[in-house]
Image (cartoon, rainbow over the protein chains, first blue to last red):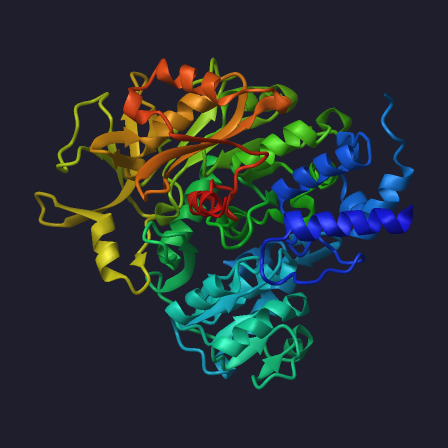
Length: 86
Length: 511
């Protein structure tokens, strides 16, 4: 599950978010927020993706640096975050 | 200026960033050592020095060090595409760059293209002399440099309508005039904690970097990661007991939408300043209700004049009309003129011209563009008065406040018809189902100019093209109705938070 989550996030970020030249390759431990790989608008897109893809609700109070600093952090967060009730 | 604040408040925090902080005496010492290193490397008065740094304490040391050495600081956006940065470095002949180890990748690309005489802030094994921040600590402080107030202090690059960025030149005089007026208007004191949300390359950063230290206040430089995570940012504002906030509206809108504001105590907030773009009235209303103990002020002024007007919101804005840009501040006068450079009758719209102590010297290396941006008028005394042409269309209301109406240069002609693009986007934004909209010119398959609109709908409301066309047709002549309507999740913005029309057009071509 974890490995899968990492791969899904990595693929989405690499194909949908990154548009600039520097980030040809990113590691799952890379700080995506401080380096500008993810900007303030793409983080909102990423969250919409997570909600849809992993069938979860990401409440505003979870929009904190600790949860989204890297792909590793996001994967951990997604694992702990319960699926949204249907 | 810094040495004065250092004499008065030596141990007070001048800047904080994350868990790091620097006192006024440390800032004076470190910037003095940096100035020494710069002079030692051959820096002459008015030589340009690039500041290529992430949001950090080093930004403050860098700019004061450069100014103290008699140099001109030029902020370079580390998140910008490398070609853009290279163009800026080349344009103003930067030979020294101040940076940090975090920027190594970007610097490497830069070094391959431009020849530097010194790199400060990290050690590298490239063929360029370098000094680390630690190396500077052993150097003497405070070189004695003769600086005149009309010497250049900083150059800020902004996107030019021609496509290549233009460098706005400010002197110590114009910078200090802004510092004095802004600190007076918002009654800054050494008790204040100022949030510096804007990156150094954005002109509104001068409030946190220059105005705050002038009064002995503490400036909190917000680390990059916080600018993206609203809930963390809200927590920071509360924890740092920020008393003055200044940013573009977008940052405040994100705080409002995702910041979980009721969870935190914002009683320290005294002033909330916003500028750079129009703050939609309904968001502003909600935020003012949320932060009901703070006073809100709309700040207006192109980077060329720093700031020139203000509008304090003494009550909640009513309806959907934009908040006025307000009154002209001290030591400044304005004219409203028509396309023939004649003053318009009171209450009529026209282009705003500004004459102020805070005005720029001109655009770096672009005398023609500079001249075009100025309006010269000789008074009876024979003294020439120089005004800056803002390109902004305004009108004075009955109450005497200036109202911003749009850009004069967003006026377009399609098939011979004259159209204001901002009129279309304004109508779209007034629609209850639309969250955001950008209207711009693009080309169809035949290469014909057409108007395009990129639209974000509110809360995933379903909205189809025909509904929008019907809505617009209610207000617009047929020729002004966009030919292309695109629904997107976001509208690209540049690093200043303003809509990036160039990117929008490129996106269309790629589609």
